Every structure is written in C-alpha cells, then in structure tokens.
Length: 225
Image (cartoon, rainbow, N blue to C red; front, top):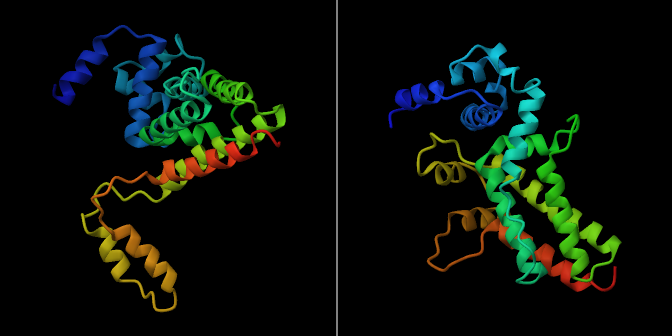
C-alpha cells in the first residue's frame, strides 16, 4: 500500500490510546525521540494535537506508553528448558527489540523518568525469579540480574553507537580502515582485520558471545554467592 494511502486509512481510524502509541512508535522509529512531539504525532494521526489529550496525559505519558509497549514484547517463558537457556532467550529477545527500536534503550536508562515501565518490572521480576528457582541465593540472583541487564543494555548502546550510516557505501568500513595508519597499533590492526574477515562457518553473534560469558560465570558461582 502506498504511504499516502496508508496514512489516509490510518487517519480515518477512530482515535484511541492504543492507536496513538502505535503511531508514536512509528514516528520515533523513523526520526528518533527528537521527532516525537505532540504536534508531529497529531499530524501523523491527522488530528489536532489537543485531541490527543483526551487519551493521553502528556508527552511523558506517551513516552511511558511506547517504551512499555516495546518491552512487553520480550519473551518471558517459564524455565521449562532450564534457567540458562530460558534467560538466554529472554536476553536475546530484549536485545533484538531494543535494536529494532533504538530510542527505547535511551528511555529505559533515562535517569529522570517519573515512572518505571510495568513491562520492565515484569522482566526484572522474571529474571530474578528464574535465578532464585535455579538455586541462586538472594544476593546471587541480584548480582546475576545486574550482570545480565548491564550486558543487554550496555551492548545495545555500544552496538547502536557503532552502526554504519544508512547511506554508507558497501565498502565504507574497508575504505575507512585502509586510510588509518596502524603502524604503531599492531593489535588494533589485527582487530580491524577480524572485522573485515569473511567466514562461511556459523558463528555466535557478538551479543550472544558476551551473554554466554556472563552465563558461564553465573553457572560457576551459582552455589557460592
């Protein structure tokens, strides 16, 4: 469906909180949080900005709603396959959603948010519960959750910060690295070569590699912390 036709159809739909949040996510995905103003949101919905306040309190309410909606998609299945595999799947799911909606990580970590996402509370409770049921002490579960969550959020921010521009040519990275003088940085040169190396072998992604290190460490200290 052409964008104009989709917009026209969307604008004819009844206004509701759910619809406002769905469109707010689209606006944020396209232009980032800076683009998500009440005026821009109203324009995307085909209504005056003041009409939005019949369904949401203010912009902060919209921000709370969209981050809650994104985090609600994290897989939180019970640990029928074992605590490690279950938590690994939840962490990978969280990472994939945060990358899909790059602005959401910023909102989760924003220190001056007035409220905490209900979906995030469920996620935290789920990780802690699975660790406790796996035999971790209250202290071990607490520290384990911190290690897992900091990897999910920290790696996501790192990955987003190192992503290639959308309009970058295919050989952008290779050209950039070839223009750098590595003569005084031999190990950095090796690292750069790894980025350019192609392999036909299936590999664990960088996020999963680090996550497995965290889970390996937790397995070792499960009954000692």
